[in-house]
Picture 1: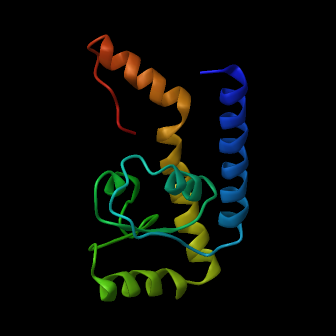
Picture 2: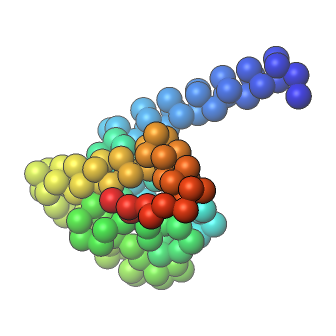
Length: 132
C-alpha cells in the first residue's frame, strides 16, 4: 500500500468522522436500526456527543445501551417497537434527554482507546478485566 493511498484514506476517515460529529451534535436522539453492527463506531460517536440512543437489539449494540438509562433497544423489524422507543425519547424534556446523554457519555468512556488497549493487554497477560 502506498503512503499516498494511506494518507488519502486517513483524510477521508477524518472527514467522515467530522461530518458525523456535526450531524450528531444538533440532534435530540440517535437511532441505529441496522442489525449488522459489530462495534458501531457511529453509535459510539453519538454516545460521545451525549445523545440518547435507540438501537436495534442485535449483535454488539446491546452492550452500548443501559435500557432506560442512556437509551432504549427495540426488536429488529418491529416498527411499532421502534416508534414507541423513539417516542419515549422525543417526549422527554430537555433535562431528561441531557441525563440520558450524560449517562451515554460515561458509558462510551469504557471504549476509549487507552482503556481498550489496557484491557487487551491484561487479557493477554491472563489478568481479569473490569467491564466498568
